[in-house]
Image 1 (cartoon, rainbow, N blue to C red):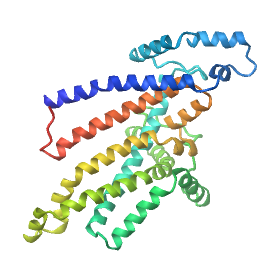
Image 2 (image 1 turned 120 degrees about the horizontal axis):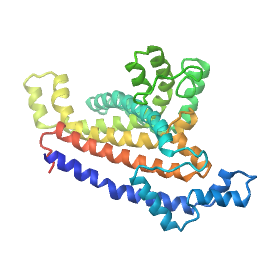
Image 3 (image 1 turned 45 degrees about the vertical axis):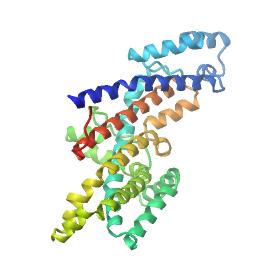
Image 4 (image 1 turned 135 degrees about the horizontal axis):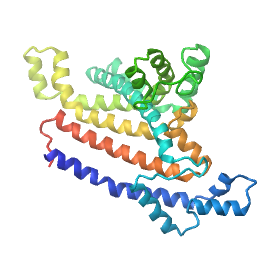
Length: 337
């Protein structure tokens, strides 16, 4: 009951956040120099055509009235229409969002599966060569920009070795699996289409690896730091004195006390991966929200950009809520309400 009230309160806090995000993106879209109507209408369009387009999209109305119409439509579930393609933005989001979600999920899984053990191993061998090696690797992954690593991986694993495709989400000559969740790996497994699963996995591998490297380093460093303190507490020394194996001590006692900072880091990194996949999606021509945002920005098509910003705000907020709720399952001392 207390958890339900807590969740309801957190969800209600999303309303002012979304209103603030919508207002910010609306103001920015209107003050940026340029003529989106002119770009959408084309260079040969007459002033009459441009004026008609402004009227169709409500751009001839006063700015306060434009914003009120925009925010009221959002609460009705009407995300508007693309000025450039004339498609419903909601329809585009249903196409692009699963691609970004699948890429980010794969990246955060890779980062967690590699980063947490690396951090634990580094903490167990503090100031020894495994620790120095892990910290140097983390510094390497953080220092190199994602776009550089993406191009190197494309050249080496894609062109030189031919192990993986260098772009796209699926083979352009093959039909993707039927849409159930929008996530190709899950959809292909649900349909027992293992050929489609292999194709989707081969296209996902390099982009997910490249996207995961920065988060991997951050999770590894957080895991190391959160493990160091409980490793030297009195109850751990007592457990060692009673003859309990080191692996059991680490797994059952130390790691559990270090999990809250690790879970926080994983949650934050997942949110940043969702919003930070723009470069990776652009380089690999991955049809996700990042690529959609870049194309819309180049066309000054502000309706999709505003909606994408709101989607990212919702995703960040939901991830934070899920992370906070997870604390109560990790540490029984955490209570809500």
